[in-house]
Image (cartoon, helix red, strand yellow):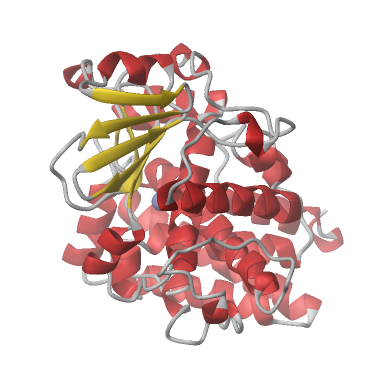
Length: 373
Ligand SMILES: [Zn+2]
């Protein structure tokens, strides 16, 4: 499963500005319009996408209501054999498509839009060099079919597991549909001479950086499972102290480290959090005769993989392991799980205030304790 996570990539090159483009999208349909509102062909790809959109709605209802405001977040492309199936194309996308067969305003069939064999990402670029691309200032989800993903990540054997990856990416699209977050990504984070690749390089090239992160992650994990409030609070204080120490140690050589790390902890941590929460929806479908299903899908396994979701089990452990390429996913995910344990509401504010680091919500909590007043 470790490999799975390495390949869940968000391809986004961040440089210059224009947020109106996203609002031009007419494809993020309000959720009160029913699924039958869309005119889609009856095909396996359509049934799979519809299944994920139902899952999105359930996850949102259970954990992140704003994520359910729209039935879909916007344009998405499903790659299968020689085809790119374009769902919910916006006007920008339509202008860029060539040799297309139009089924309806909601579904177009095109020859493969690129020759890249693996897709599981949200594409967006603010770089003027990409100004002729359909993803220029315009987030577009891209997914290879279950079968094609399985060739690259053998552990993804089912449509259900594939769906959790798709939900992760759909949440990135939801993030980019937030005016404040996209503006911050574009005009603040995107112009810094430091990015997520520099975080990975620090982990790989500096002998102390990753062990320090892994120690911080260990403290967070302990705090999540600690039942005693005082002990938990002191673990949180310890986490914040260790984090601060690391930021100070590396801050003089890498002055943008903290800002960039904070951003990716929010971006990837929240997407991983939603991915994890979607697994509990799939678990609730197991042995449930009312659960949504996918007709005639040879990769559909009736949710059996999710009967038991255990983060200590090797199938799920990648979610909480802080590795060199993905520590920001894990730290963000664990802080969110800790905030849930503390019953601290953060979801309403998080994407609207992307400049506020996730750790700051923990710091606010510590500051609010009586002995800190
Ligand atoms: Zn991601």
